Length: 335
Ligand SMILES: [Zn+2]
Image 1 (tube, rainbow, N blue to C red):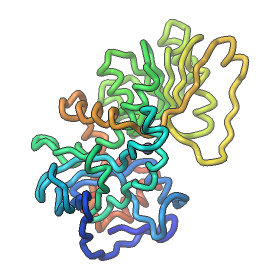
Image 2: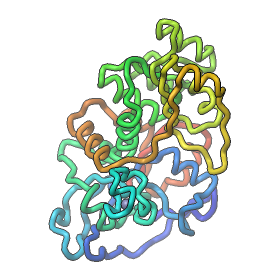
Image 3: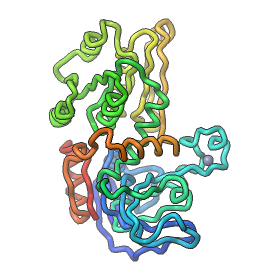
Image 4: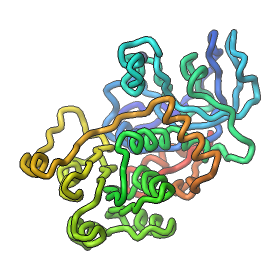
């Protein structure tokens, strides 16, 4: 099991194999991915995580043991899941806004960089599924990030042309999903390795290092600006620039979260007189998880090339040191 002792310092520890309680299942992790949140945790620690923090939340594996009363899964079943599930009892769950469930954080599964992880009853009952045999564990581990993207797209309801700010895995997953829906995805990035990956997927990304991004988006949208802009970098400057990428009447989705206490500034007259809609989607609902699962099962696009490298669990410290240095995009840890 990987333990984050302090920012930048990961240690591997032996841990007794946990026994699942009633309603829970124990999963033997076969593939765990890294994402921006894990890298942020590595760099800064995480205020909502216990010490010593277990981290890693995108994973797939095999059922190793089931708790009392679990009938949908049996030992040895390959499974795919996400790391949270709503309580189905709070005010927000009753409104169908399960992404805002007040108990979401308390049941969150963390610690996928380990041999075993325990899924609580809520996840077992709502957000855990049998993995198809023709889907690899690493592809199945995309269920969680893709659920975020499906929720984002369902909330933004993009039409026509969509400017996507950010060439990381979330930017590319948005671009792939929107292209699949017949929309014009204009991907904007500034890292050579990632721009190249976008090109290998057949996109013609805007290189923000060499181009005036606002002008480039206007040129591709009849001079008007995109119908929708989706911010996928989680940086203050990109949040503030995003409204300038859309046309009058356009929609801006601020997908990449900023640190608590961040303040952003927008041109108020642009928002009002050009009727720009701003919002910031968070997390996902079980419905979005179902949508993501269908996208993966139907193989609507290939997610595997988003993984830039694979490491055994024993090399996880090296994996994060390289990510921290800006190398690669999403890596796969195989315990
Ligand atoms: Zn709830």
